[in-house]
Length: 330
Image (cartoon, rainbow, N blue to C red; front, side):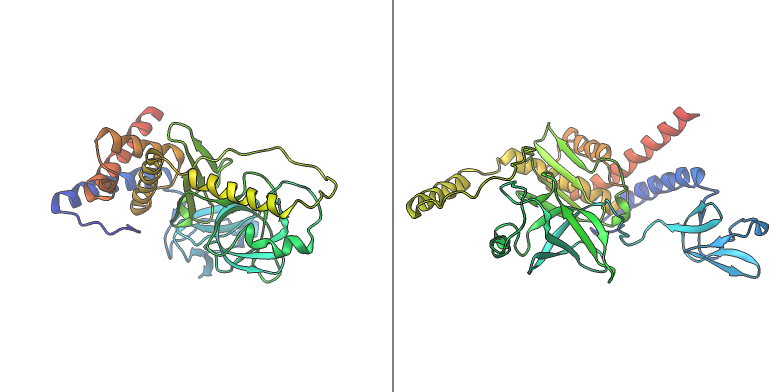
């Protein structure tokens, strides 16, 4: 188990071990032919001219696995896909990152990868939504958009020559994330899906499952799709009107706050994700909601979700769900 360290008593250890063993039996039954460990022989037809890929080697005329994982075949290529690997980015991945540096015409982001990612000023929408060329004034005002330690959501656009990533945020659903928590989990727990943005209406929460292992749980923000076209340069306003507008905006920001109920929902959902990460379960929206409902039915406080007893209950419930689903298939 990763993330949290659980202090289990003897009974809880036995219950958890029993639940994990049943889960392992279900997974081994479904992937018995595809899963391999180190030094396992991979059955191939040598007459077809097999191409040995990642995680394989040739030993005494046999193709042998060098890592633990699942056998994948693409035409003549045979390779082993590791189950617990570092984040391997692909074009189109939805990621959550933290700004490390504001450089000329770009931001440098930490995305849980071996190299930092780059978000160019020209690869994102301006705050006012105007579609126009970036000017020197925009470059000077970059810190008003993102600054150091800001949490940003973006999409992988391309790979640069040095191996780093180039991001883009040309949609209103991308941009700065506020009023929430960013969680760090193992990237292999987040599977690539069609939808990584989730709005939990019953809780008033936005959930973003980043492919890089960074997960955002925050207050819901309405996405504005109205884009402003090119407009003529506006006239310069008076200094007094600027000061009044600034004072009004500061007062509005002070009045806007996250309600207590929403903050509790954020913490409850975040703890559900922490429990899943500790047990090594895949992070999906359905499983997260099930854990939140389980904690509510048990009448547990938010901090009690991180206790050893609740983690054991989650493992036992997952084992029951897997067993019932396999019986239905039969």
